[in-house]
Each structure stands twice: as C-alpha cells, then as structure tokens.
Length: 576
Image (cartoon, rainbow, N blue to C red; front, top):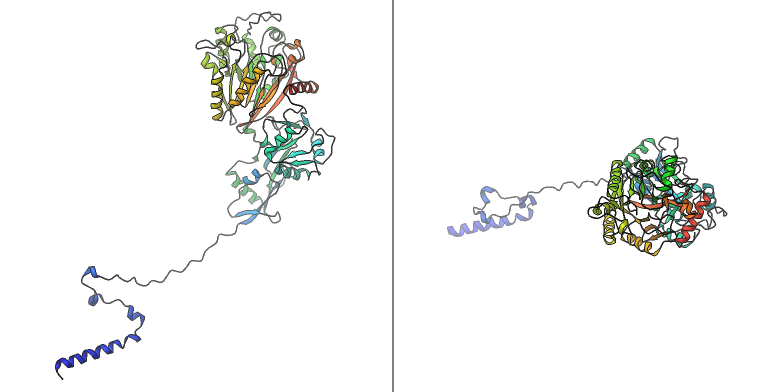
C-alpha cells in the first residue's frame, strides 16, 4: 500500500467515527458557541449574528385589584336630583342601595336642626306655591295647602289638582305623605306654566329654581320666598336635609363635598338674589310740595318708605328739576312749568333711592342751569341717572349695575320728543327715543348677559288699557331683548303683557303726585318689585298703593287691591 492510500484510509475512518457521534450529542453541546480563538471569522463583514444568551422570562406579576369600595352612604330616594349629585364621598367609599347598614344617611331631617351629633342641616331646599301671573289670590295657609294635598276641596285652592313635576312629588310626599288620589298631577317641568295658563284655577308646587316671570308666587302663612327678609326656618315649604350617622364619617363626607361647593347646599341662596323696585311718576310740586312743606319733607314716605328701602335697587322717575330759586309751592298753580326746592331731595334720600330716571316731560322746565344743578345733586348722592343727562350722548347711555352676581342695565327715553326732550349735543335734558339705536343697544347688552330694564316717558292716557302706540313701542323694546319694559309716564295704572319673554307694564301710576282728587284711577298705583336670581329675571311682585291725600300713598286694603288687579288684568285681556 502506498503512502497516499494509507493516508486516505485514515481520513475516511476518522470522518465515519465523527458522524457516528452526532445522535448522542446533547443540546448544550450542539448550541455551544465556538471559541473565539479558533472559529471567529477574520472578515467582519462576514461575521454571523451573535446569538443572544438565554435568559429566563421574568415571573408574571399577579394582578392586584383595587379594594372594593365600602357601601357606606345611603341617599334617600326622594332627594332632589341636584342635591344627590352634589354629595361627594371620601376615597374608598361608595353609595349603598339600602339604608340598613349604611354608616351615614342623607335624608329629610325630622326638625330644622336635629340634636344628635352630625345632624345639622346639610342642605335646604325651598319650594314655592305658584299660579298664573294674573291670579288675584295673594296667599294661602299651610293648613289649606295640606288639605288640598290630602284631597279636601273647599279651600282657597279650589278643586283642581295641584300640578308639579316628579321630583317635587317625591320630596313633598316624604314631608306630607302620599297625596290623595286625584289631588295632584305630574307634568314635565317645562310644561307646567303653560298648563297653568291654559287651565284657569290651577296651582303649582315648584322648586325655587323653576320660577319664571309668568308665575305669581303666592305667600304661604304670610311668607314669600321672593322676599329679601325670607326666613327659611319659618316657611312651611322649606325642606331640611340632614347627614346623620358615624360622626367621623359625617365630617369626612362634609369635607369632601365642600371641596366642590360650600355647605349647606341650597337651591335658594340669598347671596344670589337681587330685588329692583320700579315706580311711577314723582313730581314734588303744587299740592304735593305744599303738603310736604306743612307736614314734613319725608311725610309722603310714611307708609311705603320701608318697602322702597328694602329694595337692593330703588328706582324713582323724578320729572322735576331742583333749583335754589324755586318759588314757594302753590297748590293752585295753573301753568305746567315746574321746579322743586333742593331741600325736597330729602324725600328721595328717605326712600333709599339708587337710580333716577330723567325721561320726564318737565325735566327741562327751569332751563339748563337747573338741570345741571340737579345732576350735580344726584352725583353728590352717588345715584345713577339715565334717560336724561348733561347732553344727548350722556342721556341716552344705559347705566350698568351689578349686585349679587346679577347684571342689570337701565335704559330709557322720552317717546314724545320735541320740547319735552331737550338733550342735544351740548344741552342737558331728557333724551328723545331713537328706536333703532336703542334696539341695537339693548340687543348688545342682552348679549353681554345684562338683564335690560327699559322705561318710557310715553304719552299719558287715562285708561287701564294700553293704547296702540304704547304697545308698538314697548313690544319693540321687548323684541330687542329687554326683560322688563315699564311705562313711567302714566298717572293711573295700566295693563300688562308678556311679549317674547319680557314683562311689559304699560303704566304704574303715580308715586308722589297730587292727582288723588281726580278719582279712583289716579289714586291707585303700583310698586313693581322685580326679582333676579343667579343672573336671570325670575319674578315680579305687584304692590298696590292708594293715596290718602295730595302727597302720601299707603298700601292698599285687600278690597282695594282686588279691585285694582281685576281692572288691570281685564284691561290686559286676561280673565282673573
């Protein structure tokens, strides 16, 4: 055998033995990386991908579920929706479906303030008894209201079912028990006022937040929730809700809730309420001025002064300029050129005047010097004036006020114009009506969130019924966006109208003027107390006055009030 053959046989034998080893090789042996010294390629571009060393997968974490919130707080099912939504719980607590076992409970309080720990009022909800605006009845007793709820007829509330919405039914049922069959009807809240106006004799029970101007709010036990001096503890339609139970948890729930809103929770917050009283003609001249000279300057306010002073904003339409050289008043004065002694401004101070309307026919009677002197007096008092001013631009501007978050604008003009409205580029006086400008200005102010009150010195008509030119001009102001349109010129009360959401009162009658001798209509008058809440106009109270002499009005008797309302509502096309 040659040397080359022997070498070939030896190589073949080695290869056959190596192949025979593969079936018994372990995975570790097969996958072991080659030595860097013997196997690494010298050409880096041809380097094979480096195998990632084996790493065991990390253990899968066990999911940790949050603890189930403790059902610790129970809400009575009759709670008003806004009240239930306002309650906040500390973290880790939930509401309970059942009262049993709940650590705290929010429910109707047995008394306005319970004695047990943690039972102080958590919330106070105010309701109102209301009827259509043209209703003659001014109030009822809580006993009569409860009797009607229980199905008894023959009370002041008649035989028709009381109307309300579902949440009010639930809340009052908790207070009074379930109503008798047929004693109430449930309607959607947005339909209640239309139902009442379409079906005479209907009365509604409403939460305070549902009030709007087409309702008349009736007193219950002589108390109205519209009043500034309203006492919720004495009012029968106030519901008090208490949070009771574990004192520590009660404190924690109260703290959590107050992060969003202060306590107690209220649907009638006095800090959001504003009252504005509008009045009719004031003219401190002739027999009125003479009576004041003899009996005292503040004598005319003897009976009605407190009502005007209670208003947040008291309006006076004083037609007459003050001047130092005004003659002694003459009760028998024939001419119609008027002035007032500056000392008589004390009467306007006495009634708490805030806003003076200057649209009257007689503001220019004593000339520019007297008008500017009068404006100086008003400025010294800090009173706002409008509808007249030091020139036309000043006179036509709206005056803007804000109280308790309610934005209110006053704007007015003299509809007669001519010599009655002397304001021009340089001259002071009342301003004549520029309707196009006023409509645009009203729309602008309404768009900025103001409740616009527009007042007129219009033509005087000795009728309860409004006349066509009054209607046309007043409706134009309402259509522009005014919420209240009021006639300051009338020497006797005139009709009402709701037009495009606004209340129009065509004439209030006199406030301080000497016409009572002319008959019953000129002895009658209105103080219109308008109520604003949380940025919107919600209601009007009609306060009837009656003159006892040439200077002093008093509050009407029930019979006088009924006669006035009947006459004015009939003239309005309503059937009281």
